[in-house]
Length: 125
Image (tube, rainbow, N blue to C red; front, side):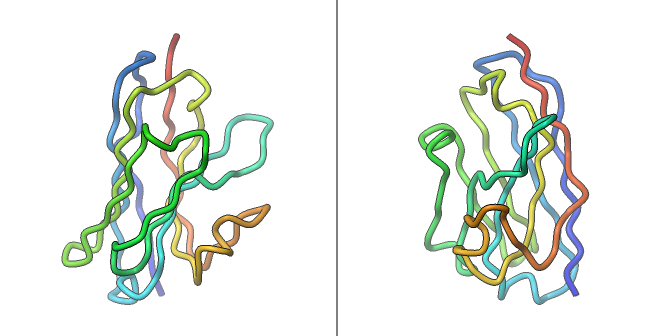
């Protein structure tokens, strides 16, 4: 079992930055690829970024590539999402998740084994 708790969301102006954290409980965390997802009002949940269990490979949606960076700290059971150059269209509830593989994360809808409860990110124009 893996429990995930996100933090770091908030209100920021366009062009600003936020760093989201996802703290995990359970050593199984280190065996899972991890991902960040978001869901805006009236829209489906979408893949944002993913990282392999070792942290050696990362994946990004085209909409965030070059602006967001996903990292993980397996010693501290945490995954991060650094978000720079934020835009109003980045406004959403952001979720972290542990998935069995990157293909599942990037499927429509995305599939994961464990989900966090989400953290709100609001970008004002």
